[in-house]
Length: 131
Image (cartoon, rainbow, N blue to C red; front, top):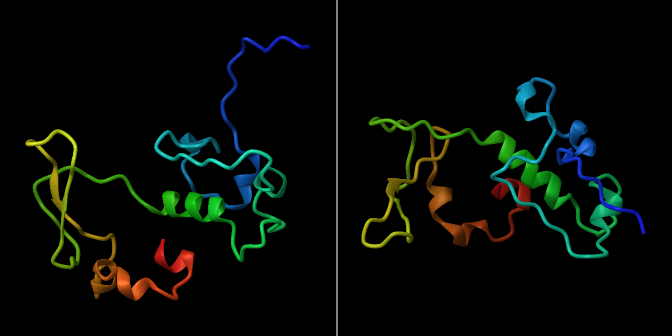
């Protein structure tokens, strides 16, 4: 049995080069971002397929869709002004009671955002439309 290497290698995801646009900042280095957790079951076809052959039988790769959605999202800017269309909703955190985080739910788009606040209308929509 071979000894494990003591060298730490970055968790590079080379097959994502086709998914990540070329104008992405070089700091990404095609590694899994710390805030993103992607897991697959043991002996899964995802390890073999890597989003190209659709061996799982799904129409689109859920891992690739999650990476794309993560890359589309921007880090929130902390400030005192809120800009954006919003359904009349508020996010209330659950950790640290009675001192919980509260913020308005503002999507990163302007216009009619009522669909974000009505999950009952999501039925029949594809995964990529919702994400």
